[in-house]
Length: 336
Image (cartoon, rainbow, N blue to C red; front, side, top):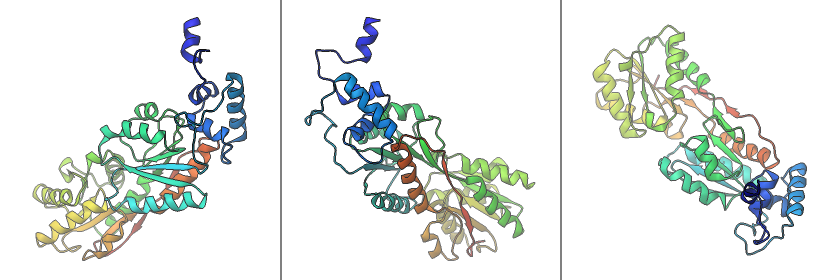
């Protein structure tokens, strides 16, 4: 028992730290900092628990201690896969606008699609911010170990860890709208260009499920797996045309991939949508500039950013909200 107490409580030989208080109070060290610095967004009961723990341990803040001197302004860390990907700027704008409306600051970083970078990046950011909003590939247990209790909102993913909040996309509603639209236009042979490296299996899964419900089975060779890029979309369309020339419509994992498919189809002399209808997913503005313009499942990306900040507000107040869900809408343009 004596050894256990030494593992979980500070000894008289060393100064009590902010992390000691966090451990006793059962919160993150950022929450302790907010409580001690009397930041307004913290839940009163959480503040009381932190201050009780600080008094119990006889904690005395040191302005030289790591992480103890924090600016009065709440800072939110935002992690995206790549700032060059045109999907993310509107989300970033939504986060920044929503944070600024609350008087908060935003710190932005990127993983460059490299899941191996995530733990180190999260550990670094966790000492600089009050909460995190992240697109991540690593499983929840790895993420939780890296952030050490910092409030976290996961994007486009449902968390397994009950401490995490989330903003997710209603993929099924989007796929239902797209498939129904293609069926109404007379298409019965529909394929898909998927991107397994994006680690978002829901788009393919829901496409297959919705097609099956409508009595349109999709064979394995009617789904091409490619890298998430314009070049990947070109490769995917070429593969589908080679393996399944009977397809009259193709739905792409996202608009970036759909643009590649669009380019490949035009290069092969196909009329769009006369010979081949194309549907994207995400609702990127640049899809309007294709000829013909791209039909897409439109996601309100700015809303995603705003909802993420609202989730952070709940977490900082000491409550974990249910996942926020963004419902996409079919944006019909001339490619179908």
